[in-house]
Image (cartoon, rainbow, N blue to C red; front, side, top):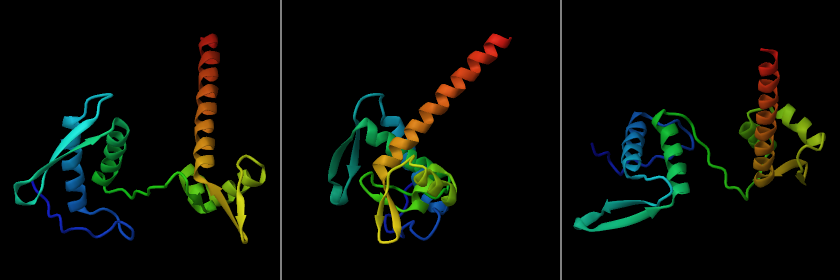
Length: 154
């Protein structure tokens, strides 16, 4: 199945539609068949006038593309956040999947550093992702401790 390349309306103001979903699923299938763990994924592209071009995707890029295509295939909204970017409190709250008031409380409690731009708080994306990773580790440790306690009770 080939989908039209001229279909380029951005996702900025809309969810992926059925055509986007089909194209994403098709590309994900192609990518998945070419991926080998720990190795670059090599894809050969057919260009106009019968020319071809080969591209090598690093494993990290392949996995990122697969994740993006998986969401688009499910017709889910996706936002990419450049790591060096300064985020608003709402963007940061959305990434952590918490309410904005709760996120503001985290800032005021000193859990995360921020800077002021006029009257607005801005958070470095790198700081936010470090905090998110730390939170995941703390939850994993707590879960392991609960599992150990549960094992002792049995």
